[in-house]
Length: 336
Image 1: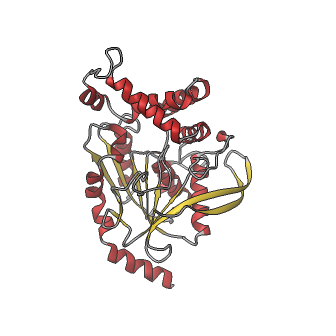
Image 2: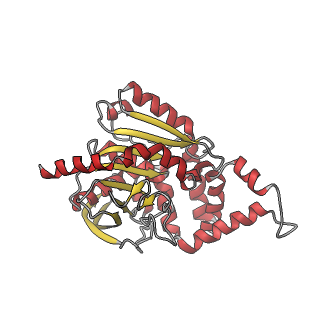
Image 3: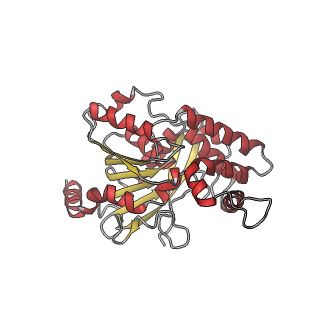
C-alpha cells in the first residue's frame, strides 16, 4: 500500500478571511516516482480519501493499478486528502471557514511543494470533480486534461437544497451521521435501482423492509469510519461550489483555454443531474474549447461512478493508453 505522506502549507488565508498559520496536506502516490513520469491527480469524493487502490479500503481499485486505466506502470498518480476529512486524523471544527476554492488553492500549493507545475490530467468524482473544476479555473495552464465525473462547475439550487437539509440533520439529529447518510443514499442511487433491487421485500422482518435494513447498514458503516466534523465540512464544500463566484463569467473563465475537458455524467443521476453537464458541454463547444461529453448507461444513479468501471475505461481509454507519447512529451518539458 502507498504510504501516507505530508506537506505543510503555511500562512494560508481562506477566501472568507479566516487565517491558518499551518495547514497539513496529506497525500499518497501510486505508480511511478513523482517527477519521473506524467502526473495524474485524482480528487476524492465526499466520504472518500487518498487511498485509491489498497485491497481492503481502496475506493477506485478497478481503475488505478498496473495495466488498468490509470496505469501505475506508466504514470505518477497522486491523491490529496481534503484537509479535515479525518483520514489523516486531522479535523477542522470551523467548517464554514472553507470553500471549494480554498481546497483547490491548497491542492495547487501542495503540488508546488512537490515541484509539480504541470499535470497530464485532473480527474475527480462528485465533490472531487468540483475541486477539479475550481483548480482549472484558478490555474488555467495547470493540466492538459480536466475530467470531472458526476460533477458540475457550480452547486445548483437542487444541490444547495440537499446540502441545507443534510446540514440540518447533522446539527440536530440524535444520530447525525447515520441519519444524514441514509438521507443522502436516496440521492446517490436512483428510484429505479431501489425498486429493481428491493422489490418491496421484507425478508428479515415482517415489519421492516429490506430497503430500510440496507439504509441502516450504510448509516452504521459510515458512523464507524467517519467523523461528524468531517461530514459537516464536506457537505459545506458542496454547498459553496461555484467557479464564477468572485471571478468572471463562465465564458470569460474558459475563453481561450487550452485545457481539454471531458465530462462524464450518469443518465440516472438525480444528485448532479446530467442536463447541467450537457449545457456546459455545448457552452464549451461554442467557446471553441476541446470538450467531450459521455454518459454512463446505468440505473445506479450518482454512485455509478464507483460501479461502472468498464464504461469509464471505455470512455477514457484513448487518452490514457497512449502513454509513450505522454512520457516523451513529459521528458521534453522537464529537460528545458
